Image (tube, rainbow, N blue to C red; front, side, top):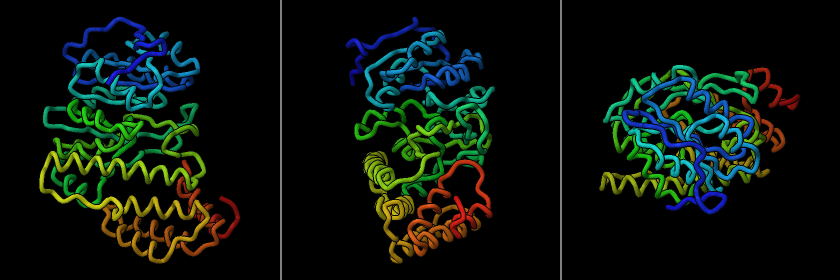
Length: 356
């Protein structure tokens, strides 16, 4: 794959540093995050780790991001806009470390995070993950762990879970560290502009997954997140997520069949994740989900590895979404996806039409 710069070739702002002995590479891809990218870079460089290399790729930003990046003094490149996946692959090719973290330019690592990550890495690890603290544009904490994770190291259990449900609990992009050979799978994902797709769930087929429970990074909510957190849900966004999910699962099925021939992979349209997205899309589109859709969703929920408390809360949400007038159902959907604390009083106000 060839990446070209704004003037026809990649533009590097700084000479290449020595990377011999680096265990971890942090690749920061930036598109129009002038307000945040310096914070992301400093969150890595201020840890002053000789065993960590950092590369920043400006993905054709049209704001002042490139000037901000240049002032930090890190190894940086400016390339033609092509999406986060292409920018991250370009950054990957500028690094040598055996493990890679793709840090979003609006997110941050906490002090000491790099050392804690490196301490957990060895040749058998295919992916390491950690939860992220949610913060706003001014660095104020919105809420804790996104998502809450347990500490473990395993492979087989997650292989079985992926074969059955297509996914397992995993954080957003900035909470994942991949072994370099797993990153290479991104070159096949020409259907996607992002990096947190099939490789998340293909990783157990390549080695151990190390999960940390400590929040050693931050995920920033500011209204432009691709995840949709902090924005009112709409039908088009849910449909986009469904289409992306199906494309990623098709790729994942291909990877699994190539890696472990003979294993049976679930039909993506029969998974809990697909059914939940379709259910939410119906509400957002102004339609009432059918009882058959509700029953199918709840039946899949029961087999998911959630706590009983969460299953009861989610079943209540799905049931109310199926029976409430659409205006209330939409308000309930917005409440479900809001950031920050959600209280029983707030839930009751949504149900009885007294606010959201």
